[in-house]
Amino acid sequence: MSSLSSSREETVTDRLVAANEQYASQFTDPGMDARPVQRVAVVACMDARLDLHAALGLRLGDCHTIRNAGGVVTDDTIRSLTISQRALGTRSVVLIHHTGCGLLNLTEDFRHELAAEVGQRPSWAVEAFRDLDSDVLQSMERVRTSPFLLHKDDVRGFVFDVRTGSLREIEPGIAPEQ
Ligand SMILES: [Zn+2]
Image 1 (cartoon, rainbow, N blue to C red):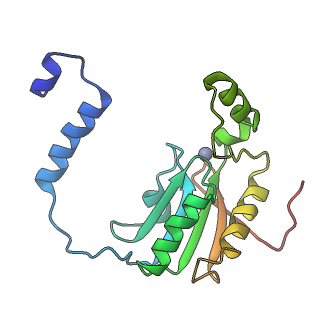
Image 2: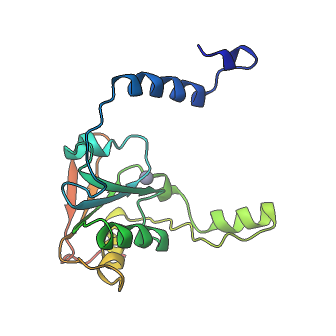
């Protein structure tokens, strides 16, 4: 327990900082540069049940991970992928959505209700979706049609099942149900 917490209740961040002290005490510099060893960028939902490194057998230094609500390919995702490919040498893109995603229960009403509540309209779309498979295809299409990316021949999309831990690949040839 740190001295900070004597004057107030310990927060989750205090526990993270304490965990880092432990981590750093055993850390040895792996001597890597910033270029991902496997030359892959993974775009995935921020969902707490998705442990990307464990689920994909990835190790420290292997990949870029770009995460947001839904694992949606937004302008900011394209920004990160562009930097990943053009400045840091990645060539493959893996997109991962998952079962039980919080975005499946939202609609763009979320945005309208938010605007009504706070008096300011967000500049971003909620990017809610009802069909996981078609949204993975949508994300793949956004990557494949981006003029900014150098490498678009190895773009694959998957749905991760949070109950089984398995990935199911989404094939672009199969038309999504609308
Ligand atoms: Zn999610």
